[in-house]
Length: 155
Image (cartoon, rainbow, N blue to C red):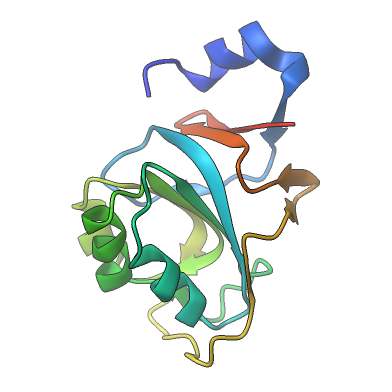
């Protein structure tokens, strides 16, 4: 990513939504962007793991965990799989774990927080569906940008 989100918003503000939710940076890259892919799941990361094991082609996976911090949806092995498969980043409306190891990986990871507790593995959830997080729509195929200032997504 070469354009800062603040500069991008100055140029294209009417075409973009800004996520007001304050997420923490956990990955080895703070700035990332790409086309949106989505997973909606609650305390179950089987679909996240499955999707991140496929070619990402520079996409950003937006994970709607309902804002739960009760268990982690992404750990170091899943994040490493995302790196190996060419994903640009992860935006997690929920928790991650293995934050030190994830911080050493060359991928952007933004999340609400961390919790060492594992999530379920039943595969319950939905993939590539429109999501609304804090009033912002994340639609598969639109573009998302993230950096230290925040997250912007195409309307």
